[in-house]
Image (cartoon, rainbow, N blue to C red):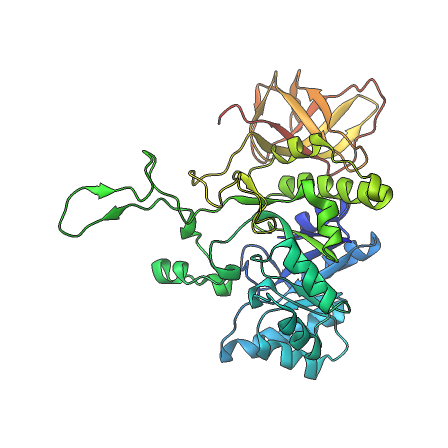
Length: 410
């Protein structure tokens, strides 16, 4: 099984690779469904491909908007250059884009986006005959339905999302953002109106009616997040080649933490097989990344202890991303940190280092401003600071390790 992690920018790509992703998927300029904030220009794409390949990982280029005629020239100018850089596969959703790719680049590996909402074996066979190697299945399928498709079309690779945000619309194809904000989700500009609170009001009356009987209002369009960490054997038995983490708009901390846990679970399954055992600490770690209440989505329809929607618009944020390690100066026992969020003297930080299976804790006894050596009570975003670090186990902390802290503000 292949673990795929999101790469919203070059930093996140490198983070995903360092924490164990077999492959990363990144946006093709303004032609993916996370444009423009989470896509790659050609310069950064080249750097990302080089880094991934040096570390044995693959790069899949998402070019999966639903384009208009006037998009094609720029799309394929970009894609021609991306092919020269050595992408490992391209993810598409539109038949026209697929057809042109097959004409111009017949040897490239093609993956079909979940946006194509493939839900049955006949569709898989159709796309196979169009030259598609891998199908990223619709999120509406159960594990039993996926297994049936794999039995019927064993030669086609199947991929599915296993963790992250769930779109309320069918296979993510939504018109709500375009209608309300003139920003189309199908062209990478979704404003996420499904997360907003809605109330019902009859035209001739003043009072508002909550659609669901709850004083907080109604969030009937606001879905839970997907989390399948408990079901790695079941995902494998269903015949999935690729297990995909959602989140190109999320932070590098999210990418590191989630990739690390799914890497550990997959590795244990591949090593132990039938003797595989789930580690409860994995779920505890996933609870420390920003998320909405977790669900198994549509994979296990027999489960009746979860609802698809949640009553809060904002995610749970028990921990925050506070910085990255720029250097571990072992001589004077200090960590050089680039801060991304506020942390203060007295707090306990947790370092996620890809070298170590468990977080490394450090209590902040002192914060030293790198510029002038002055002592600070707090560090804030973009500060470069040093903190004392003395580890009894003698561990060397890797550059680019991710640092988090408990979010006492929440």
